Image (cartoon, helix red, strand yellow):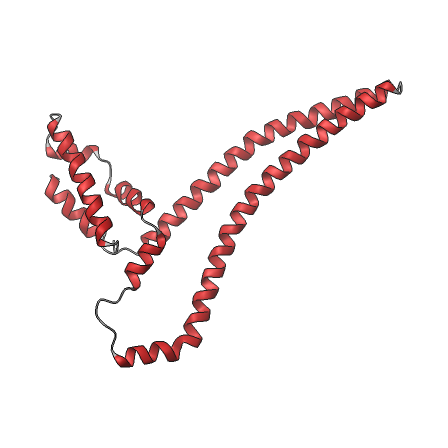
Length: 196
């Protein structure tokens, strides 16, 4: 596929994205192709080096805000007629609560993700602090001459601190996975607003 075919296909796939973002993306990818052609590649090789069309679409969608896509989608193509305005006003008691409920559900899901991440790190901190408290208690029991209690408390405290270190790295991986998944879901939602 040459440059003009690629840009035409990209424009077609971005139907539903605001026109200024389409033009910005087309200019960007057109310049990338031109730069690679100047470096000695053919147009077909330069287009192939950009990656798959799906990756490019996902990249563009990740950069366009969701409110912009929604505004572009619901923007009427022509002025509303009087009877359409009347129907919108009369139907407001039905569609406004539905939209508010949908927004509430989406916001709740978003908050649940962040609360889950915060909870994981709160758990890790509590394990670390309890381990440090056990080590401090162990030294207090050593001062009192309770060697068996010292050994048990010191060992348990070190195990808790070590567990907190392991949990920290595990929770970092879980957090990265959750953030990656939420980004994919957001791109999927944005993809609903463009015609593929």
